[in-house]
Image (cartoon, rainbow, N blue to C red; front, side):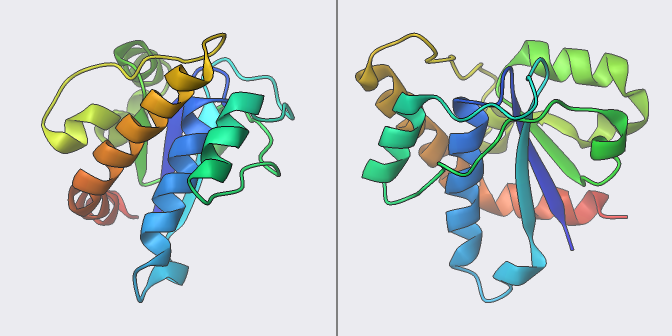
Length: 157
């Protein structure tokens, strides 16, 4: 079973939204039960609820992330993932430095659509900021879906 981890900073805004969107994309495949998606944060406090605006935006898009609880990345967790997608270059750089054995599995999410840009953190912003980020995540995950699948399968142990 290929396992994909989506990473942001606190695991309450971007990565839970990305996790929900990617799970929805996999749900449309006949082999949906063969794929596992989670999210985590580089500086997350374990057990925090998603940001309210993230929950509302996901509800408007037909997804419920209210049961999500944040989790911090650790070595034990990373061993279980074939592909790690980060929101920012800083996340990617930090993970590669901390967990060198997994460096070949760590990518910036925007690389899945042949770009190299950070996805801004909407925390503290207006609802429109969260909507903009959710749309950007949906675009990148949808357009990069085939590449995401290929890379996860390539690194599967």
